[in-house]
Image 1 (cartoon, rainbow, N blue to C red):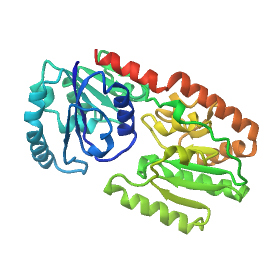
Image 2: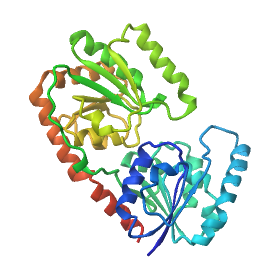
Image 3: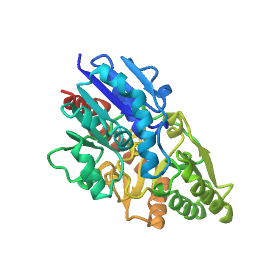
Length: 353
């Protein structure tokens, strides 16, 4: 069996790690797998040849401190990696690639795959990283265009097991609108709050949920800003901060419309999760969501920062049960055709050949 070294250095369990877990669940009996991770707990049920847990570098630090810490991490893993003799090295994120960049030099002849799931705007940074990879997987055309790597770049969309995401057909009096994302500036929850305020003035029977929490300590002030804004606008009883939720299917089963106000979202895994549950999505025409949402068919795309139009389009869906149902059904069909876990795994396995 082919030996694949997988590096997923984040200690958090966000979209990149969820996507990797679902991939490994499908291929763990086909390959010999060695995993280097920032949190073994996320992968305990996966069949692995070897696990190594590391202390991840997630804070912004000087290059000197980064190199020093990276050296310590790499030194602890060096002998294990050499002994494993990987035939393929797969970096699940850009941070994983940075933390183990030396592998590109040491294993010069080994196939190295870099999975890009983030906005990378520094051209010099991108140019240097491209030198140490044989293949670059991008989670959207939007991200692929940023890299400008026609001979190395390949777009592979994230996928989900649609059979696990089923519409519960629940019935309740109150309609629910939610925003599901980590609390960080570019996810732009402030526009969700502003849109919710407009919707609430028209319909006081709608409840609003902000689901998610900070992943990085640097976002504490942003979270405080959101909470303070809700208080100042007298919306404490209208908009609820629910925090991080482990069971996303249960959360989605209580939602009628998902608002996704992120700016330059690389892909947006929560979009296909919501659509698979027959929930229409209203988002900004920015980044990956343009490739996921079909305007006027599975939801609505509006101009970035136009939170008033976000509110208008969401209200249309809340007031028209037939339209909301139609968009929901078309959304699930789209996920089944374009974003299934089977398609994702098949496309990824072709890279491992």
